[in-house]
Length: 404
Image (cartoon, rainbow, N blue to C red):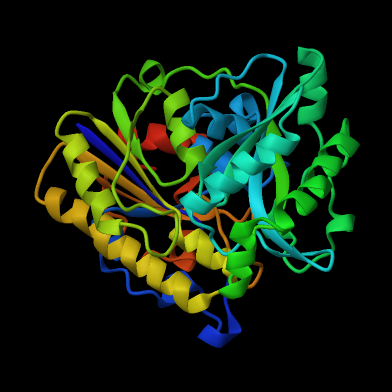
């Protein structure tokens, strides 16, 4: 049996006045996702446990079958795992964004989606001036990087991990001074962020970016902190081997910690221009040898954060045609497979951030009886009697072919 999980990050949302009170998912042309619903079932799932932040790390941990309330320690450690940083018990890993600030306000959480080459030079520059003693910086991809802080003890590391740090995409246009970290060692983290402004502002890369009318990477933003997680391998939990495909370090890091093979696809960017088709094709290659594939596409989420309705529609349509469609066309006439398609969380363009809204999912395959639904939308899912209250049980539904 082959098991396929396809995640369009942040696909779901809320009704928009400009779309005649329809959601982006309702408006987008998504032939293949609708076809999966017609052939199988649609349901509603809670991927964000009550009281937890509606973030991609929490949601994708749940979709992979791990209870976030038991296993989640933070975003930073997942990204550390992917870039090969071996955390010790006293280490706290922070996600480090290269951002753009202007007149004390955060104006871009990605520094204009800065390139890998530019970002690598800037992170090396930051590490030269701020990476000393207890602190070290590591380059990731694009605007997404890592800072590791060595605490005095494991207990101290846990205290630092409990600090309240706000994701930069949640405070676009807001005052930085009102959204700084709160909690143990808050001043150390705030000072590092503040000092980064002078270090980056006059770097040659940022001078060129300003000349080209591109947003400069003139500050770092630290958030998503956590300690090294202790998780069993996916194969030990579910008895099947598998792979994971994503452009995002935290998703790939989650895969590594779970013991899944991480597949690098040429041309993936984590943005609108990612290699959608390549993800579908490489997923099919992986399934020739392995039983499980998890494909994650970031583009719809980025469009949601940017508040761009048209870009989100296009991203969903590209995901449907080139990822879902590529795999569906190869499997639709076969037996012994099941497929699950879903967003990890909602990213409404009206909010420009993640929400804890229950998400729609479509499931089809061997042993799954059709329920008569026709379209993959939030409304269709809300009308279904198929509800998974704990998102980490979705994998069990997929593997066991659950019929409510």
